[in-house]
Length: 284
Length: 320
Image (cartoon, rainbow over all chains, first blue to last red; front, side, top):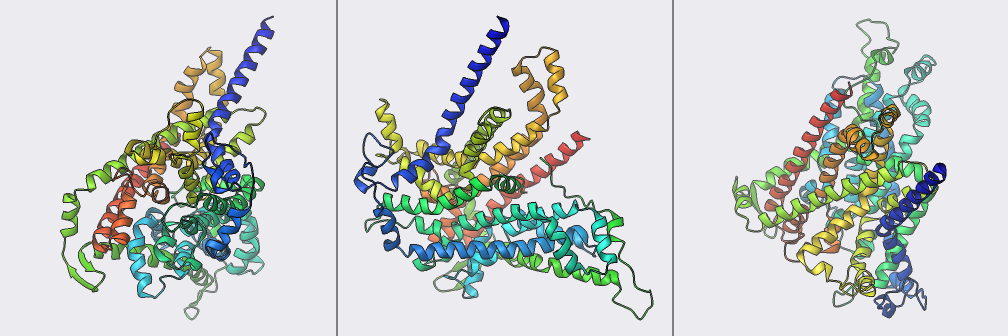
């Protein structure tokens, strides 16, 4: 009798927990679902009352218009190539610097590490005003250079260097000693011993950097003026008609194309994403 | 949560094994010197990057803040502290600072509260726990602009949220056109997108609480509320404090959310400092004043970071 009561109480508690979680999940899940669902609606269905989730007459029209209204394919390629390039450069730069700060003894390494850490403290929103003038002086306004250089060498790269250093500090010294006795130089040790062991840290760095670059908004808004140079987040906000009104269905279709590939990769490689982004929470 | 340490923990043994060359006065490039040179070369790109793209710009920002620069004629004139005086008499600044305070405060309170609630609810084994963790974390990987656009769409006067409210008999409102609801909208949009990170950090902290403490409390017949407030909360409070500061610093940098959802409006209601900096420097082309405001933003961030480092020291002390 008593165990029955206890079992019933635990069942009730479990049901309450599930209901609470489902209610809490609404603002986390519904916007994304609604975005995808609405992107297939014709414009007159989008603001229908009462609102419906699924389109009565699903259509690809908004997707087609996204590509004809702006050079969206080009903008997509811009975002992809910049993110890949930035991620690749960051992985090399940060693993080199992180390795040296953790494993090589040289005069001034602590001071230089503090100098690098300054890059973590100063938000990019602060430096963008003078950076704009600097890039203007170098004739790099309305090119992708500012986005690539600043993201790949400052900002997210500094966080990456910090993560890599923390990781290399944990490597056992014996591994390197053996390699050095075999006559391997530092570059070979970095490439053939340290990097292959740094898989988890490198994937965290890669995810973090890719997302930072993919999501950049202030920088492209400030540096780029030609639509064919835009990156995706910037392009998303430009789907407006001649009167400045939002073309919602086209915007939602473009947003869906921006979000869904990343979401799919996230669902496949969840653990790496969570580890990588938790590092960004530790920043500072 | 493993705290990244700033202390140099390299063991001397690991580095000193470099086979030293014969110590004759003729050989300059000993193995140790060559090794050090490699070290400098390895860090060179990163150090140059920080110097050119962070430290020089901050210096330039200080310089700009002391000059009046007409970007159209290209004339620059030294004016000393005039921009700083202008900050004090800027009639819009009190509104901007209070919007910044309300936004950051709202974000931190909601983010920490919700993050803790989610972590506590999901810090147990039951069917579907991984799915729920994934769901709550998923907005973190969604592009800020896309996420904000969708919320803007749902918050329209004739949008989904009002539609649903109307369907269940509650009159909606024009969320983005009224000061208080517009602020609420940007806060909620920001919190829902980013709370997943805090949830993960809190989950890690909760799992770090030693199980024996809970067992002991249960033997003493402590209620679960007592256990939470007397054991869990004090033990994870260091994480709470640090996360709170990191969250405020993040909120101070929230630009895209504001730019896409409200453009600082209505009026100045959601014009936070970072958006005001952008307006002054890039919309009104006032480089000098924009730089001055940017330095103000930097000083806020530095103050908070300093506070965080102090607290982290204290935390390490408690752990010992």
